Image (cartoon, helix red, strand yellow):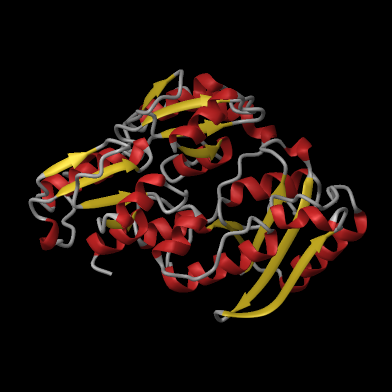
Length: 364
Protein backbone atom coordinates (compact mmCIF):
# COMPACT_ATOMS: atom_id res chain seq x y z
CA UNK A 1 0.00 0.00 0.00
CA UNK A 2 0.92 3.67 -0.24
CA UNK A 3 0.06 5.59 2.93
CA UNK A 4 -0.83 9.18 2.14
CA UNK A 5 -1.67 12.45 3.85
CA UNK A 6 -2.24 15.94 2.50
CA UNK A 7 -2.60 19.30 4.22
CA UNK A 8 -5.14 21.83 2.97
CA UNK A 9 -6.56 25.04 4.34
CA UNK A 10 -10.25 24.08 4.26
CA UNK A 11 -12.83 21.47 3.20
CA UNK A 12 -13.27 22.90 -0.30
CA UNK A 13 -10.88 21.98 -3.11
CA UNK A 14 -10.47 25.67 -3.98
CA UNK A 15 -8.39 26.05 -0.81
CA UNK A 16 -5.56 24.11 -2.50
CA UNK A 17 -2.91 21.55 -1.52
CA UNK A 18 0.03 22.64 0.64
CA UNK A 19 1.71 19.39 1.68
CA UNK A 20 1.69 15.82 0.41
CA UNK A 21 3.41 12.92 2.16
CA UNK A 22 3.75 9.36 0.84
CA UNK A 23 5.01 6.21 2.52
CA UNK A 24 5.33 3.02 0.46
CA UNK A 25 4.74 -0.18 2.45
CA UNK A 26 5.74 -3.67 1.29
CA UNK A 27 5.20 -6.70 3.55
CA UNK A 28 4.64 -4.38 6.48
CA UNK A 29 7.97 -2.56 5.99
CA UNK A 30 8.63 1.00 4.80
CA UNK A 31 10.51 0.93 1.49
CA UNK A 32 10.17 4.58 0.43
CA UNK A 33 9.11 7.89 1.99
CA UNK A 34 8.48 11.20 0.22
CA UNK A 35 7.48 14.67 1.43
CA UNK A 36 6.29 17.00 -1.32
CA UNK A 37 6.02 20.69 -0.44
CA UNK A 38 7.45 24.15 -1.13
CA UNK A 39 8.59 26.13 1.91
CA UNK A 40 7.31 29.70 1.99
CA UNK A 41 7.91 30.74 5.63
CA UNK A 42 9.96 28.45 7.91
CA UNK A 43 8.80 30.28 11.02
CA UNK A 44 5.20 29.07 10.50
CA UNK A 45 5.82 25.40 9.70
CA UNK A 46 5.62 24.32 13.35
CA UNK A 47 1.93 25.35 13.37
CA UNK A 48 1.00 22.44 11.09
CA UNK A 49 -2.07 22.30 8.81
CA UNK A 50 0.04 23.42 5.83
CA UNK A 51 1.09 26.71 7.42
CA UNK A 52 4.41 28.01 6.13
CA UNK A 53 4.11 26.19 2.80
CA UNK A 54 3.06 27.44 -0.63
CA UNK A 55 0.03 26.19 -2.55
CA UNK A 56 1.38 23.43 -4.83
CA UNK A 57 -1.94 22.32 -6.33
CA UNK A 58 -0.97 23.36 -9.85
CA UNK A 59 2.81 22.89 -9.52
CA UNK A 60 3.73 20.51 -12.38
CA UNK A 61 7.10 19.50 -10.89
CA UNK A 62 5.53 18.58 -7.53
CA UNK A 63 2.76 16.70 -9.30
CA UNK A 64 5.39 14.75 -11.30
CA UNK A 65 7.17 13.77 -8.07
CA UNK A 66 3.89 12.38 -6.75
CA UNK A 67 2.99 10.57 -9.98
CA UNK A 68 6.45 8.98 -10.26
CA UNK A 69 5.89 7.16 -6.96
CA UNK A 70 2.29 6.22 -7.74
CA UNK A 71 3.29 4.92 -11.20
CA UNK A 72 6.40 3.11 -9.99
CA UNK A 73 4.67 1.07 -7.30
CA UNK A 74 1.06 1.08 -8.53
CA UNK A 75 -0.22 0.12 -5.06
CA UNK A 76 -3.58 1.14 -3.57
CA UNK A 77 -3.60 4.44 -1.69
CA UNK A 78 -4.52 4.35 2.00
CA UNK A 79 -5.34 7.43 4.07
CA UNK A 80 -7.23 8.34 7.23
CA UNK A 81 -10.55 9.54 5.78
CA UNK A 82 -9.28 8.90 2.26
CA UNK A 83 -12.32 10.39 0.54
CA UNK A 84 -11.15 13.85 1.65
CA UNK A 85 -7.58 13.45 0.34
CA UNK A 86 -8.77 11.78 -2.86
CA UNK A 87 -11.18 14.65 -3.61
CA UNK A 88 -8.31 17.14 -3.75
CA UNK A 89 -5.83 14.89 -5.55
CA UNK A 90 -8.29 13.91 -8.30
CA UNK A 91 -9.52 17.48 -8.72
CA UNK A 92 -6.01 18.80 -9.40
CA UNK A 93 -4.95 15.84 -11.54
CA UNK A 94 -2.48 14.30 -9.12
CA UNK A 95 -4.38 11.01 -8.88
CA UNK A 96 -6.41 9.16 -11.52
CA UNK A 97 -10.09 8.87 -10.70
CA UNK A 98 -10.04 5.08 -10.97
CA UNK A 99 -7.00 4.56 -8.71
CA UNK A 100 -7.99 2.17 -5.92
CA UNK A 101 -8.25 3.86 -2.51
CA UNK A 102 -8.86 2.50 0.98
CA UNK A 103 -9.94 4.28 4.16
CA UNK A 104 -7.92 3.34 7.27
CA UNK A 105 -10.74 4.59 9.51
CA UNK A 106 -13.12 2.03 8.05
CA UNK A 107 -10.55 -0.78 8.21
CA UNK A 108 -9.77 -0.05 11.87
CA UNK A 109 -13.49 0.10 12.68
CA UNK A 110 -13.86 -3.39 11.21
CA UNK A 111 -10.92 -4.54 13.36
CA UNK A 112 -12.20 -2.90 16.55
CA UNK A 113 -15.76 -1.58 16.51
CA UNK A 114 -15.85 -0.60 20.20
CA UNK A 115 -13.72 2.53 20.22
CA UNK A 116 -15.22 5.88 21.25
CA UNK A 117 -13.33 7.70 18.49
CA UNK A 118 -11.33 6.86 15.37
CA UNK A 119 -9.48 10.13 14.99
CA UNK A 120 -5.77 9.64 14.47
CA UNK A 121 -4.99 11.49 17.70
CA UNK A 122 -7.32 9.21 19.69
CA UNK A 123 -5.91 6.06 18.09
CA UNK A 124 -2.37 7.10 19.03
CA UNK A 125 -3.49 7.38 22.66
CA UNK A 126 -5.55 4.19 22.62
CA UNK A 127 -2.70 2.08 21.25
CA UNK A 128 -0.15 3.73 23.58
CA UNK A 129 1.91 5.12 20.72
CA UNK A 130 4.26 7.81 22.00
CA UNK A 131 4.03 10.15 19.03
CA UNK A 132 2.36 13.59 19.07
CA UNK A 133 -0.04 14.48 16.27
CA UNK A 134 1.46 17.56 14.63
CA UNK A 135 -0.90 17.92 11.64
CA UNK A 136 2.17 17.97 9.41
CA UNK A 137 1.76 15.60 6.46
CA UNK A 138 4.88 13.48 6.92
CA UNK A 139 4.48 13.18 10.69
CA UNK A 140 0.85 12.16 10.29
CA UNK A 141 1.72 9.48 7.73
CA UNK A 142 4.32 8.04 10.13
CA UNK A 143 1.73 8.11 12.91
CA UNK A 144 -0.81 6.31 10.71
CA UNK A 145 1.75 3.63 9.87
CA UNK A 146 2.31 2.90 13.57
CA UNK A 147 -1.44 2.84 14.25
CA UNK A 148 -2.02 0.34 11.43
CA UNK A 149 0.74 -1.90 12.79
CA UNK A 150 -0.95 -1.88 16.21
CA UNK A 151 -4.55 -2.19 15.01
CA UNK A 152 -3.63 -4.85 12.43
CA UNK A 153 -6.81 -4.49 10.32
CA UNK A 154 -7.43 -7.45 8.03
CA UNK A 155 -10.57 -6.34 6.17
CA UNK A 156 -10.06 -3.53 3.67
CA UNK A 157 -13.01 -2.36 1.54
CA UNK A 158 -12.21 -0.14 -1.49
CA UNK A 159 -13.60 3.37 -1.46
CA UNK A 160 -16.66 3.64 -3.67
CA UNK A 161 -16.40 6.48 -6.16
CA UNK A 162 -19.49 8.09 -7.71
CA UNK A 163 -18.71 9.92 -10.96
CA UNK A 164 -20.74 13.15 -11.42
CA UNK A 165 -21.54 12.04 -14.98
CA UNK A 166 -23.52 9.12 -13.54
CA UNK A 167 -25.45 11.28 -11.10
CA UNK A 168 -28.64 11.67 -13.16
CA UNK A 169 -29.15 7.92 -13.50
CA UNK A 170 -28.24 7.48 -9.85
CA UNK A 171 -30.91 9.97 -8.75
CA UNK A 172 -33.69 8.52 -10.90
CA UNK A 173 -33.11 4.95 -9.86
CA UNK A 174 -32.47 5.35 -6.15
CA UNK A 175 -35.79 7.15 -5.79
CA UNK A 176 -37.37 3.70 -5.93
CA UNK A 177 -35.17 2.04 -3.31
CA UNK A 178 -37.09 -0.40 -1.16
CA UNK A 179 -36.25 -2.20 2.06
CA UNK A 180 -34.48 -1.05 5.19
CA UNK A 181 -30.94 -1.00 6.53
CA UNK A 182 -29.57 -0.45 10.04
CA UNK A 183 -26.22 1.09 9.06
CA UNK A 184 -27.25 4.44 10.65
CA UNK A 185 -29.88 3.00 12.99
CA UNK A 186 -31.12 5.63 15.49
CA UNK A 187 -28.34 8.05 14.50
CA UNK A 188 -29.26 11.73 14.26
CA UNK A 189 -27.73 13.13 11.05
CA UNK A 190 -27.44 16.70 9.76
CA UNK A 191 -26.42 17.61 6.18
CA UNK A 192 -24.74 20.91 5.33
CA UNK A 193 -22.85 22.62 2.51
CA UNK A 194 -23.08 22.44 -1.28
CA UNK A 195 -23.02 18.95 -2.75
CA UNK A 196 -23.12 17.25 -6.16
CA UNK A 197 -25.58 14.82 -4.57
CA UNK A 198 -29.10 16.25 -4.12
CA UNK A 199 -29.90 16.74 -0.45
CA UNK A 200 -33.39 15.28 -0.91
CA UNK A 201 -31.78 12.07 -2.09
CA UNK A 202 -29.15 12.05 0.70
CA UNK A 203 -31.86 12.49 3.32
CA UNK A 204 -33.95 9.73 1.76
CA UNK A 205 -31.01 7.32 1.84
CA UNK A 206 -30.24 8.26 5.45
CA UNK A 207 -33.84 7.59 6.46
CA UNK A 208 -33.83 4.24 4.64
CA UNK A 209 -30.71 3.37 6.63
CA UNK A 210 -32.40 3.97 9.98
CA UNK A 211 -31.31 7.57 10.67
CA UNK A 212 -33.24 10.57 11.92
CA UNK A 213 -32.41 13.59 9.73
CA UNK A 214 -32.58 17.01 11.38
CA UNK A 215 -31.87 20.51 10.16
CA UNK A 216 -29.64 21.85 12.93
CA UNK A 217 -26.67 20.64 14.97
CA UNK A 218 -27.25 20.03 18.69
CA UNK A 219 -25.82 17.96 21.53
CA UNK A 220 -28.00 15.09 20.30
CA UNK A 221 -26.48 15.07 16.80
CA UNK A 222 -24.40 11.96 16.01
CA UNK A 223 -23.08 12.87 12.55
CA UNK A 224 -22.62 16.00 10.44
CA UNK A 225 -22.21 15.29 6.71
CA UNK A 226 -20.42 18.17 4.96
CA UNK A 227 -20.30 19.31 1.37
CA UNK A 228 -18.45 22.41 0.17
CA UNK A 229 -18.52 25.57 2.33
CA UNK A 230 -20.26 23.97 5.34
CA UNK A 231 -20.51 27.21 7.34
CA UNK A 232 -21.67 27.63 10.94
CA UNK A 233 -22.99 24.09 11.34
CA UNK A 234 -19.42 22.80 11.03
CA UNK A 235 -18.25 25.20 13.77
CA UNK A 236 -21.09 24.07 16.03
CA UNK A 237 -20.34 20.39 15.41
CA UNK A 238 -16.66 20.88 16.26
CA UNK A 239 -17.63 22.71 19.44
CA UNK A 240 -19.89 19.83 20.53
CA UNK A 241 -17.52 17.04 19.47
CA UNK A 242 -19.93 15.71 16.83
CA UNK A 243 -18.54 13.21 14.30
CA UNK A 244 -17.85 15.06 11.01
CA UNK A 245 -17.65 13.35 7.61
CA UNK A 246 -17.83 14.32 3.94
CA UNK A 247 -20.56 13.66 1.36
CA UNK A 248 -18.20 11.22 -0.35
CA UNK A 249 -17.78 9.30 2.92
CA UNK A 250 -21.56 9.07 3.32
CA UNK A 251 -22.09 7.76 -0.21
CA UNK A 252 -19.24 5.31 0.32
CA UNK A 253 -20.79 4.07 3.57
CA UNK A 254 -24.16 3.25 1.97
CA UNK A 255 -22.51 1.69 -1.10
CA UNK A 256 -22.05 -1.51 0.92
CA UNK A 257 -25.83 -1.94 0.64
CA UNK A 258 -26.42 -0.22 -2.70
CA UNK A 259 -24.75 -0.91 -6.03
CA UNK A 260 -24.60 2.74 -7.01
CA UNK A 261 -22.99 2.10 -10.38
CA UNK A 262 -25.93 0.05 -11.63
CA UNK A 263 -28.59 0.92 -9.09
CA UNK A 264 -31.18 -1.58 -10.18
CA UNK A 265 -31.62 -1.71 -6.44
CA UNK A 266 -33.53 -4.50 -4.77
CA UNK A 267 -31.85 -4.18 -1.42
CA UNK A 268 -32.41 -6.76 1.31
CA UNK A 269 -31.08 -5.84 4.74
CA UNK A 270 -29.53 -8.75 6.59
CA UNK A 271 -28.64 -6.58 9.57
CA UNK A 272 -32.26 -5.58 10.12
CA UNK A 273 -33.30 -9.16 10.85
CA UNK A 274 -30.61 -9.75 13.46
CA UNK A 275 -31.35 -9.19 17.14
CA UNK A 276 -29.21 -6.52 18.70
CA UNK A 277 -26.77 -8.07 21.15
CA UNK A 278 -25.64 -6.07 24.16
CA UNK A 279 -21.88 -5.76 24.26
CA UNK A 280 -20.29 -7.15 27.40
CA UNK A 281 -17.26 -5.17 28.54
CA UNK A 282 -14.53 -6.05 31.00
CA UNK A 283 -15.37 -5.52 34.66
CA UNK A 284 -13.74 -2.67 36.60
CA UNK A 285 -14.60 -4.01 40.04
CA UNK A 286 -12.76 -1.26 41.94
CA UNK A 287 -15.22 1.31 40.51
CA UNK A 288 -18.36 -0.48 41.69
CA UNK A 289 -20.46 1.89 43.78
CA UNK A 290 -18.05 4.80 43.17
CA UNK A 291 -18.88 8.31 41.95
CA UNK A 292 -17.59 9.13 38.44
CA UNK A 293 -17.37 12.56 36.80
CA UNK A 294 -17.75 12.60 32.98
CA UNK A 295 -18.20 16.35 32.41
CA UNK A 296 -15.01 16.60 30.36
CA UNK A 297 -16.18 14.22 27.64
CA UNK A 298 -17.84 15.34 24.37
CA UNK A 299 -21.60 15.41 24.78
CA UNK A 300 -22.11 12.75 22.10
CA UNK A 301 -19.88 10.33 24.05
CA UNK A 302 -21.19 11.04 27.54
CA UNK A 303 -24.36 8.97 27.09
CA UNK A 304 -22.40 5.95 25.82
CA UNK A 305 -19.95 6.10 28.70
CA UNK A 306 -22.73 6.69 31.22
CA UNK A 307 -24.62 3.60 30.07
CA UNK A 308 -21.52 1.40 30.39
CA UNK A 309 -20.69 2.79 33.82
CA UNK A 310 -24.19 2.32 35.22
CA UNK A 311 -25.38 -0.88 33.54
CA UNK A 312 -22.19 -2.92 33.40
CA UNK A 313 -19.70 -1.48 35.87
CA UNK A 314 -22.42 -0.66 38.43
CA UNK A 315 -21.01 2.67 39.59
CA UNK A 316 -22.88 4.48 42.33
CA UNK A 317 -23.26 7.94 40.81
CA UNK A 318 -22.58 9.91 37.63
CA UNK A 319 -21.47 13.53 38.01
CA UNK A 320 -21.57 15.91 35.01
CA UNK A 321 -20.55 19.10 36.77
CA UNK A 322 -17.49 20.96 35.52
CA UNK A 323 -16.59 21.79 39.14
CA UNK A 324 -17.44 18.36 40.51
CA UNK A 325 -14.50 17.49 42.79
CA UNK A 326 -16.43 15.33 45.26
CA UNK A 327 -16.02 12.19 43.17
CA UNK A 328 -13.80 9.12 43.12
CA UNK A 329 -12.80 9.17 39.43
CA UNK A 330 -12.81 11.72 36.60
CA UNK A 331 -12.90 10.42 33.01
CA UNK A 332 -11.81 13.14 30.58
CA UNK A 333 -11.06 13.66 26.90
CA UNK A 334 -7.48 12.96 25.86
CA UNK A 335 -7.03 16.40 24.33
CA UNK A 336 -7.30 19.59 26.31
CA UNK A 337 -5.73 21.26 29.33
CA UNK A 338 -8.45 21.01 31.97
CA UNK A 339 -8.49 22.93 35.26
CA UNK A 340 -10.76 20.26 36.73
CA UNK A 341 -8.17 17.56 36.04
CA UNK A 342 -5.35 19.61 37.54
CA UNK A 343 -7.38 20.29 40.67
CA UNK A 344 -8.38 16.63 40.92
CA UNK A 345 -4.76 15.51 40.75
CA UNK A 346 -3.91 17.92 43.58
CA UNK A 347 -6.70 16.33 45.61
CA UNK A 348 -5.42 12.81 44.73
CA UNK A 349 -8.60 12.02 42.79
CA UNK A 350 -8.07 9.39 40.08
CA UNK A 351 -8.14 10.88 36.56
CA UNK A 352 -8.52 8.63 33.53
CA UNK A 353 -8.24 9.72 29.85
CA UNK A 354 -11.05 8.39 27.66
CA UNK A 355 -8.62 6.27 25.62
CA UNK A 356 -7.40 4.56 28.82
CA UNK A 357 -11.00 3.92 29.92
CA UNK A 358 -11.64 2.47 26.45
CA UNK A 359 -8.69 0.10 26.91
CA UNK A 360 -9.88 -0.86 30.41
CA UNK A 361 -13.39 -1.90 29.32
CA UNK A 362 -11.98 -3.83 26.35
CA UNK A 363 -9.53 -5.71 28.56
CA UNK A 364 -6.35 -4.36 26.93
